[in-house]
Image (cartoon, rainbow, N blue to C red):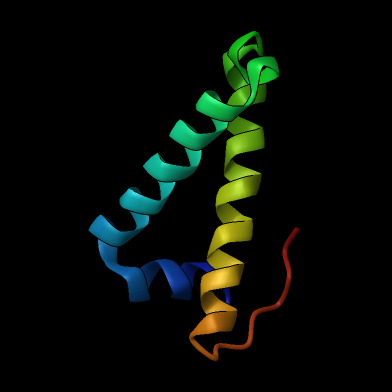
Length: 68
């Protein structure tokens, strides 16, 4: 199962909740991220979001091919 399948299973609200949590946590906990260029921050955040989706997929017993 791929990350798109995990996103679909979570639904749009679930996905955006996770996305918001990851981005807010990243800003709150990393002073380095506050000074990043927005494009660099977005790439870093998307990688962390994908990692969280993989973690959720594993917990739900879904087989994920790592795209990271």
